[in-house]
Amino acid sequence: MRISTITNWAYGVTVGLTLLSGGAFILSARSADHERQAVVESQALDELSERLTMAAEQTSEDARLFVMRGEDRHLQAFRGDEKGERDREQALKSFKAAALLPQEMALIQEIEQDGEALDAIEERAVTAYANGDQEGARQMLFGAEHERVQSDLLTSVRQLTDLIATRTNDALTDAKQWSDFWGAVAKSLLGLTAAVFLGVLYFVLRRRVAMPLMRMTGIVNRLARQDYAVEVLTDNRRDEIGEMNDAIQIFRDNGLERERLDAERRADQRTKDLILQMMHRLQACQRQEELAEVVSLFAPQIFPDFAGHLYVMNDSRTALSSIGSWREPRRAGPVLTSAECWALRRGRPHVSDAAAGDIPCQHLEHADEMGICVPLSAQGDTVGLLYFEGASDSQAIASARLYFELIAENIGLGVANLQLRDRLMSLAIRDGLTGLLNRRSLDDALNRIARDEQGDVIAMMVDIDHFKRFNDEFGHDAGDEVMRRVSAILSETVGEAGTVYRFGGEEFAILLEGGAEGSALDLAEKLRTLIAATPVTYHGRLLGAVTISLGAASTTADMPSADVLLRADAALLSAKAKGRNRAVADWVERSATDRRRA
Image (cartoon, rainbow, N blue to C red; front, top):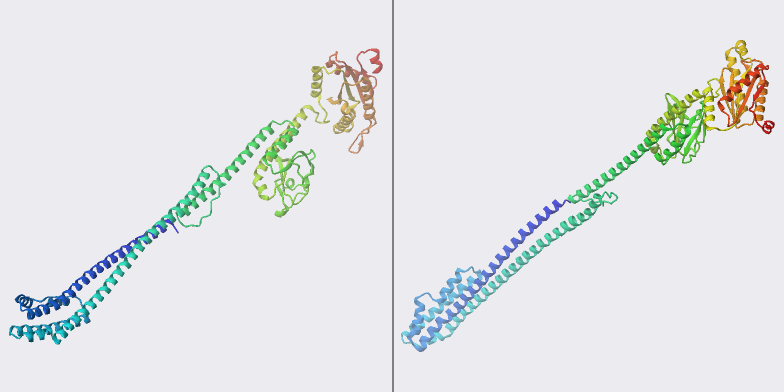
């Protein structure tokens, strides 16, 4: 019940009790007036009864004294009473004026009759005494008749007095009781009014207002300090305090929601900041290894609940290899084929969640866990795959999916840019036909060697013998195949011992840094023998024997390395002049011990 309703009811009850208490006090006052009236009436009737008794006795006394003493004053007293209205008659008249009961009125009539009979006897006695019959007068006044009539009169007066006394006492008692009753009722109602007022005051102010307000004050203070963990007790009261409690509950819920939204906003802002940092670093990467390191560093910070892989497509576009991973993913291995991933097939993100009724990717294990594959695309071409796993429900993946796709888009652009950069760099430093380093790379290597003064250098110049014959007889494509086959043998045979370059046309160059002259000559002979022994076919046709001529030259730390290539080329011309398919060396002058070692 609302406090206003309680207050209104309490006010109404208090006013009602106050009115009843006032009415009771009025009735008590009237009862007191009735009691006083009863007392006055009782006293007046008592006085009348006493006057009536005295008057009845006094008249007879004056008559008797006169006949006994003969004194005139007694006669005058008897006659004086006779002339005027006697006291007995006045008393009877006063009694008649009062509200008497029928029984009392009957006694008044008897008293009047007895009084008249008594007056007649006394008149006769006084008249007889005046006529000289003193003895007869005394006999009449002191005789049995007079005694009987006077006794009847006095008896009637006493009965009337007793009746009136009983009635007035009853009326007085009844008036007193009613006065006491209404006084008690008035006091009780007044006390009840005070109790109701104090009770309502205590209930409303303390139990319904003060205590809830004190409790809510503590809650509001904590909410003001943004301590939304405070519990707001449920209060089902439908009053102002209940409405305040509901308002505080709504304020707390709004605070919690605002705090949750702020936390989400801060987390979202932190995620965006981390993504922005990662993008800036991706733009500065110069190699795919650096890009993988950046992704592996930032991905667990952006998505702390997810493990994953960063896959890159191979050149043949048949398989993908992981170049970076984080938080040890369990479902996906380091290598997968393009056909095993539904995301790569469809060209769009795919969630592997058997519980949601969707088919998982074939390259994943542990079907009880969820994972998402996001293709890395750039300019309409798929360059890799971004994989995440570890979500406990699909909602977590759905919430982060937008960021997955945003990151995948930027990583895809980064991978594509690096691959394009690598291809451009490869075109700048490598020969497009053979894949070997080109003439520019050779010049850079010689300049580096000269700048760093790295010591002994051996250079070889290689030329395919009679190469024009392959172009003229089998076509330029066949000649290109001969070039590729010779370059492959040169690259595989030299291996890590040196570097093979395409010098131009059908000529190749080999640099051996820090190699021994004897070992270099052995390598030259090995190359010549392998190439001569390797048959070359094109479209099923045998192209014939392929031979090479080699010229080798060496230099030392105290000699300029810029001349070594010219000397090797001169040695190659010497080999051609001597009949081709041979190796000629131009070693520097050394001591006898060095020459024997070489």
